[in-house]
Image (tube, rainbow, N blue to C red; front, side, top):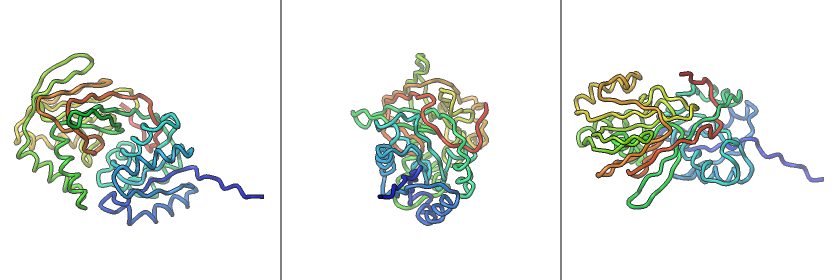
Length: 317
Protein backbone atom coordinates (compact mmCIF):
# COMPACT_ATOMS: atom_id res chain seq x y z
CA UNK A 1 0.00 0.00 0.00
CA UNK A 2 1.43 3.36 -1.04
CA UNK A 3 2.11 5.87 1.70
CA UNK A 4 0.14 9.11 1.35
CA UNK A 5 2.38 12.16 1.40
CA UNK A 6 0.70 15.11 3.06
CA UNK A 7 1.16 18.48 1.38
CA UNK A 8 2.58 21.12 3.74
CA UNK A 9 0.04 23.62 5.06
CA UNK A 10 2.17 26.62 4.13
CA UNK A 11 4.09 27.88 1.14
CA UNK A 12 7.05 30.13 2.08
CA UNK A 13 8.43 32.45 -0.57
CA UNK A 14 12.01 33.53 0.19
CA UNK A 15 13.65 36.56 -1.42
CA UNK A 16 17.41 36.07 -1.07
CA UNK A 17 18.12 39.65 -2.17
CA UNK A 18 15.96 41.23 0.54
CA UNK A 19 17.74 43.39 3.09
CA UNK A 20 20.88 43.72 0.96
CA UNK A 21 21.20 39.90 0.63
CA UNK A 22 20.25 39.28 4.26
CA UNK A 23 17.50 37.02 2.91
CA UNK A 24 20.10 34.69 1.42
CA UNK A 25 22.35 34.69 4.49
CA UNK A 26 19.51 33.98 6.94
CA UNK A 27 17.28 31.63 4.92
CA UNK A 28 18.57 28.47 6.59
CA UNK A 29 18.11 29.92 10.06
CA UNK A 30 14.58 31.10 9.26
CA UNK A 31 13.68 27.66 7.87
CA UNK A 32 14.95 25.97 11.04
CA UNK A 33 12.90 28.31 13.25
CA UNK A 34 9.75 27.61 11.23
CA UNK A 35 10.25 23.85 11.51
CA UNK A 36 11.02 24.01 15.23
CA UNK A 37 7.68 25.77 15.68
CA UNK A 38 5.82 23.01 13.85
CA UNK A 39 5.13 25.08 10.73
CA UNK A 40 5.35 22.72 7.76
CA UNK A 41 6.07 24.52 4.51
CA UNK A 42 7.10 24.20 0.91
CA UNK A 43 9.94 26.69 0.27
CA UNK A 44 10.38 28.61 -2.96
CA UNK A 45 13.25 31.03 -3.60
CA UNK A 46 13.00 33.96 -5.99
CA UNK A 47 15.76 34.69 -8.49
CA UNK A 48 14.42 37.92 -9.98
CA UNK A 49 11.69 40.50 -10.18
CA UNK A 50 8.20 39.03 -10.62
CA UNK A 51 9.08 35.55 -9.36
CA UNK A 52 7.07 35.91 -6.13
CA UNK A 53 3.98 36.81 -8.18
CA UNK A 54 4.39 33.76 -10.42
CA UNK A 55 5.14 31.46 -7.47
CA UNK A 56 1.99 32.67 -5.72
CA UNK A 57 -0.20 31.94 -8.74
CA UNK A 58 1.32 28.47 -9.07
CA UNK A 59 0.95 27.59 -5.40
CA UNK A 60 -2.67 28.74 -5.29
CA UNK A 61 -3.37 26.62 -8.40
CA UNK A 62 -1.89 23.65 -6.52
CA UNK A 63 -4.26 24.19 -3.61
CA UNK A 64 -2.18 26.18 -1.13
CA UNK A 65 -4.08 28.88 0.73
CA UNK A 66 -1.46 29.99 3.29
CA UNK A 67 1.63 31.89 2.18
CA UNK A 68 4.57 33.25 4.20
CA UNK A 69 6.43 36.20 2.69
CA UNK A 70 10.10 36.05 3.70
CA UNK A 71 11.48 39.34 2.45
CA UNK A 72 10.73 43.02 2.36
CA UNK A 73 7.77 45.15 1.32
CA UNK A 74 8.48 44.50 -2.36
CA UNK A 75 8.24 40.73 -1.90
CA UNK A 76 4.93 41.12 -0.10
CA UNK A 77 3.69 43.39 -2.89
CA UNK A 78 4.52 40.75 -5.51
CA UNK A 79 2.69 38.07 -3.51
CA UNK A 80 -0.38 40.31 -3.23
CA UNK A 81 -0.33 40.82 -7.00
CA UNK A 82 -0.11 37.06 -7.47
CA UNK A 83 -3.18 36.52 -5.29
CA UNK A 84 -5.24 39.13 -7.13
CA UNK A 85 -4.28 38.04 -10.65
CA UNK A 86 -5.21 34.37 -10.36
CA UNK A 87 -8.54 32.56 -10.79
CA UNK A 88 -8.20 29.47 -8.61
CA UNK A 89 -9.70 30.86 -5.40
CA UNK A 90 -11.13 33.99 -3.87
CA UNK A 91 -8.45 36.27 -2.39
CA UNK A 92 -10.43 36.25 0.87
CA UNK A 93 -9.65 32.50 1.13
CA UNK A 94 -5.92 33.26 1.28
CA UNK A 95 -3.92 33.99 4.44
CA UNK A 96 -0.60 35.88 4.35
CA UNK A 97 2.07 35.78 7.06
CA UNK A 98 5.27 37.84 7.11
CA UNK A 99 8.83 37.33 8.23
CA UNK A 100 10.42 40.76 7.64
CA UNK A 101 13.88 40.70 6.08
CA UNK A 102 13.87 43.93 4.03
CA UNK A 103 15.43 47.32 4.65
CA UNK A 104 12.17 49.22 5.28
CA UNK A 105 9.70 46.62 6.59
CA UNK A 106 7.03 49.32 6.77
CA UNK A 107 3.95 47.13 6.47
CA UNK A 108 5.10 44.78 9.24
CA UNK A 109 5.90 47.74 11.48
CA UNK A 110 2.24 48.75 11.46
CA UNK A 111 1.16 45.39 12.87
CA UNK A 112 3.95 45.03 15.42
CA UNK A 113 5.57 42.09 13.61
CA UNK A 114 9.01 41.65 15.23
CA UNK A 115 12.21 41.97 13.24
CA UNK A 116 13.62 39.14 15.39
CA UNK A 117 12.87 35.99 13.39
CA UNK A 118 11.75 33.93 16.39
CA UNK A 119 9.23 36.63 17.24
CA UNK A 120 7.89 36.86 13.69
CA UNK A 121 7.46 33.07 13.53
CA UNK A 122 5.64 33.12 16.90
CA UNK A 123 3.18 35.61 15.39
CA UNK A 124 2.54 33.27 12.47
CA UNK A 125 2.13 30.32 14.83
CA UNK A 126 -0.38 32.24 16.96
CA UNK A 127 -2.33 32.94 13.78
CA UNK A 128 -4.42 36.01 14.63
CA UNK A 129 -5.97 37.25 11.39
CA UNK A 130 -7.90 40.20 10.03
CA UNK A 131 -9.38 40.93 6.62
CA UNK A 132 -7.19 43.62 5.09
CA UNK A 133 -8.28 46.11 2.41
CA UNK A 134 -6.35 46.13 -0.86
CA UNK A 135 -5.70 49.07 -3.16
CA UNK A 136 -5.98 48.97 -6.94
CA UNK A 137 -4.17 51.36 -9.30
CA UNK A 138 -5.00 51.85 -12.97
CA UNK A 139 -2.07 53.77 -14.42
CA UNK A 140 -0.23 54.31 -17.69
CA UNK A 141 3.09 53.48 -19.29
CA UNK A 142 3.10 55.63 -22.38
CA UNK A 143 -0.35 55.27 -23.93
CA UNK A 144 -0.88 51.74 -22.54
CA UNK A 145 -3.05 51.26 -19.46
CA UNK A 146 -1.92 48.92 -16.69
CA UNK A 147 -3.32 47.68 -13.37
CA UNK A 148 -1.57 46.72 -10.15
CA UNK A 149 -2.51 46.01 -6.54
CA UNK A 150 -1.00 47.24 -3.29
CA UNK A 151 -1.44 46.48 0.40
CA UNK A 152 0.30 49.38 2.15
CA UNK A 153 0.86 52.83 0.59
CA UNK A 154 1.01 54.20 -2.95
CA UNK A 155 2.26 57.60 -4.00
CA UNK A 156 2.64 59.98 -6.90
CA UNK A 157 4.88 62.99 -7.28
CA UNK A 158 8.06 63.46 -5.28
CA UNK A 159 7.84 60.17 -3.37
CA UNK A 160 7.74 58.20 -6.62
CA UNK A 161 10.87 59.99 -7.90
CA UNK A 162 12.77 59.05 -4.73
CA UNK A 163 11.57 55.44 -4.97
CA UNK A 164 12.63 55.16 -8.61
CA UNK A 165 16.16 56.37 -7.85
CA UNK A 166 16.40 54.13 -4.79
CA UNK A 167 15.21 51.06 -6.71
CA UNK A 168 17.79 51.67 -9.44
CA UNK A 169 20.50 51.57 -6.78
CA UNK A 170 18.99 48.43 -5.25
CA UNK A 171 19.31 46.75 -8.64
CA UNK A 172 23.03 47.52 -8.46
CA UNK A 173 23.29 45.87 -5.04
CA UNK A 174 23.17 49.00 -2.90
CA UNK A 175 20.35 48.90 -0.36
CA UNK A 176 19.95 50.50 3.06
CA UNK A 177 17.89 53.19 4.79
CA UNK A 178 20.62 55.80 4.29
CA UNK A 179 20.33 55.43 0.50
CA UNK A 180 16.63 56.33 0.66
CA UNK A 181 17.37 59.46 2.69
CA UNK A 182 20.23 60.37 0.34
CA UNK A 183 17.94 60.09 -2.68
CA UNK A 184 15.27 62.10 -0.92
CA UNK A 185 17.64 65.02 -0.37
CA UNK A 186 19.22 64.65 -3.80
CA UNK A 187 15.82 64.66 -5.54
CA UNK A 188 14.89 67.93 -3.87
CA UNK A 189 17.50 69.72 -5.98
CA UNK A 190 15.78 69.08 -9.31
CA UNK A 191 12.15 68.27 -8.40
CA UNK A 192 9.45 70.74 -9.39
CA UNK A 193 5.97 71.10 -7.88
CA UNK A 194 3.41 70.01 -10.48
CA UNK A 195 -0.10 71.24 -11.36
CA UNK A 196 -2.61 68.38 -11.12
CA UNK A 197 -6.32 67.70 -11.28
CA UNK A 198 -7.56 65.60 -8.36
CA UNK A 199 -11.00 64.00 -8.06
CA UNK A 200 -12.06 62.68 -4.64
CA UNK A 201 -15.65 61.56 -3.94
CA UNK A 202 -16.76 63.08 -7.24
CA UNK A 203 -15.36 66.51 -6.40
CA UNK A 204 -12.62 67.77 -8.73
CA UNK A 205 -10.06 70.37 -7.74
CA UNK A 206 -6.85 71.75 -9.22
CA UNK A 207 -3.68 72.36 -7.25
CA UNK A 208 0.07 72.56 -7.58
CA UNK A 209 1.35 69.63 -5.53
CA UNK A 210 4.57 68.27 -4.11
CA UNK A 211 3.21 64.75 -3.59
CA UNK A 212 0.11 62.65 -2.97
CA UNK A 213 0.08 59.51 -0.82
CA UNK A 214 -2.74 56.97 -0.70
CA UNK A 215 -2.65 54.59 2.24
CA UNK A 216 -4.16 51.46 3.72
CA UNK A 217 -1.13 51.54 5.99
CA UNK A 218 0.69 54.18 8.03
CA UNK A 219 4.39 53.78 7.27
CA UNK A 220 6.58 54.04 4.18
CA UNK A 221 10.16 54.91 3.28
CA UNK A 222 11.61 53.15 6.32
CA UNK A 223 9.40 54.72 8.98
CA UNK A 224 7.91 57.87 7.47
CA UNK A 225 4.25 58.40 8.37
CA UNK A 226 2.75 59.85 5.20
CA UNK A 227 -0.76 58.63 6.09
CA UNK A 228 -0.45 58.55 9.88
CA UNK A 229 -4.05 57.65 10.79
CA UNK A 230 -4.79 55.04 8.12
CA UNK A 231 -6.59 51.84 9.05
CA UNK A 232 -6.13 48.65 7.01
CA UNK A 233 -9.66 47.35 7.47
CA UNK A 234 -12.05 50.33 7.33
CA UNK A 235 -12.80 50.15 3.60
CA UNK A 236 -11.27 53.59 3.01
CA UNK A 237 -7.99 55.10 1.89
CA UNK A 238 -6.31 57.83 3.88
CA UNK A 239 -5.07 60.40 1.35
CA UNK A 240 -2.39 63.00 2.08
CA UNK A 241 -1.94 65.82 -0.40
CA UNK A 242 1.20 67.90 0.16
CA UNK A 243 0.74 71.10 -1.81
CA UNK A 244 3.37 73.35 -3.30
CA UNK A 245 6.38 73.80 -1.03
CA UNK A 246 9.85 75.25 -1.43
CA UNK A 247 12.94 73.12 -0.88
CA UNK A 248 13.88 74.66 2.47
CA UNK A 249 10.33 74.36 3.77
CA UNK A 250 10.35 70.68 2.85
CA UNK A 251 13.63 70.13 4.70
CA UNK A 252 12.32 71.98 7.76
CA UNK A 253 9.17 69.84 7.70
CA UNK A 254 10.86 66.43 7.33
CA UNK A 255 10.48 65.73 11.04
CA UNK A 256 6.70 65.94 10.68
CA UNK A 257 6.80 63.04 8.24
CA UNK A 258 8.39 60.85 10.90
CA UNK A 259 6.50 61.90 14.04
CA UNK A 260 3.01 61.57 12.54
CA UNK A 261 2.07 65.26 12.64
CA UNK A 262 2.26 65.96 8.88
CA UNK A 263 -1.51 66.54 8.63
CA UNK A 264 -1.19 69.58 10.90
CA UNK A 265 0.99 71.40 8.36
CA UNK A 266 -0.80 74.35 6.76
CA UNK A 267 0.08 73.16 3.25
CA UNK A 268 -1.10 69.58 3.73
CA UNK A 269 -4.65 68.33 3.18
CA UNK A 270 -5.95 65.01 4.47
CA UNK A 271 -8.89 63.03 3.10
CA UNK A 272 -10.58 59.69 3.70
CA UNK A 273 -12.19 58.14 0.65
CA UNK A 274 -12.79 54.96 -1.34
CA UNK A 275 -10.70 56.29 -4.20
CA UNK A 276 -9.33 59.14 -6.26
CA UNK A 277 -8.23 60.12 -9.74
CA UNK A 278 -5.11 62.10 -10.56
CA UNK A 279 -4.21 63.64 -13.91
CA UNK A 280 -1.61 66.16 -15.02
CA UNK A 281 -0.28 67.71 -18.22
CA UNK A 282 3.25 66.62 -17.35
CA UNK A 283 3.47 62.97 -16.38
CA UNK A 284 3.81 62.25 -12.65
CA UNK A 285 5.54 59.02 -11.63
CA UNK A 286 3.67 56.47 -9.49
CA UNK A 287 4.89 53.93 -6.93
CA UNK A 288 3.16 51.37 -4.74
CA UNK A 289 4.61 49.56 -1.71
CA UNK A 290 8.01 50.90 -2.73
CA UNK A 291 7.77 49.48 -6.26
CA UNK A 292 8.16 51.84 -9.23
CA UNK A 293 5.27 51.69 -11.71
CA UNK A 294 4.33 54.07 -14.53
CA UNK A 295 2.78 57.51 -14.56
CA UNK A 296 -0.42 59.54 -14.53
CA UNK A 297 -3.25 59.69 -15.44
CA UNK A 298 -4.12 57.23 -12.69
CA UNK A 299 -7.12 56.03 -10.73
CA UNK A 300 -6.91 54.53 -7.24
CA UNK A 301 -9.72 52.33 -5.88
CA UNK A 302 -10.12 50.03 -2.89
CA UNK A 303 -11.25 46.43 -2.37
CA UNK A 304 -12.59 46.21 1.22
CA UNK A 305 -11.93 43.15 3.41
CA UNK A 306 -10.01 41.55 0.59
CA UNK A 307 -7.41 39.17 2.08
CA UNK A 308 -6.52 37.60 5.44
CA UNK A 309 -3.30 38.77 7.02
CA UNK A 310 -1.63 37.60 10.23
CA UNK A 311 -0.89 40.34 12.75
CA UNK A 312 0.71 40.76 16.16
CA UNK A 313 -1.16 43.89 17.26
CA UNK A 314 -4.25 45.45 15.74
CA UNK A 315 -4.55 49.14 15.00
CA UNK A 316 -7.33 51.09 16.69
CA UNK A 317 -8.35 54.55 15.50
